[in-house]
Image (tube, rainbow, N blue to C red; front, side, top):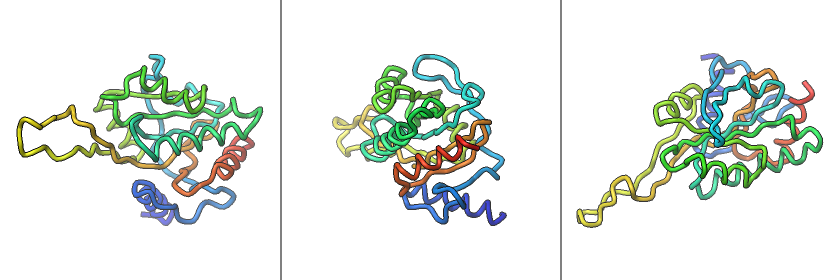
Length: 206
């Protein structure tokens, strides 16, 4: 593996663990991953029922985050940071698209996604697919997720099966694409709203 590949792999590992990233790219606060040959495209349905791919957002900088609406901490804080960073861009805000990819399609229906993502920013879109396609997309982006279900009770009368509440562990990074649809930056834990906004501004000027 090359030095760049090692750095990116480490950044993704730290993102999955919720740790701060290593050395950011020169000129950026986030990790520059434009050298990778993965994360090339996606095909999912948005919360309004429209099939989406990266081509729909050419000309815009795109932020994409994997999460689930019942996440109690990381997802809402990350989505709020994304929204605040976009709002800091002023007149350029319309040139940035925020995307939330659910890793919990069983519970995150289109209606649930619509209410969730627009609660952070009216322009944000929620994306979903079936379980198989969601896993394939996560694999394409080297993202991790896994449902964490409670252990079944010894007494069968108290077993809830798949209906019991559960959490989903997942990669905490935000993937950023440039105006041409090229995966460019990986924003991991520890970046401030001001830093995210600065990186978006720089990408918009490129």
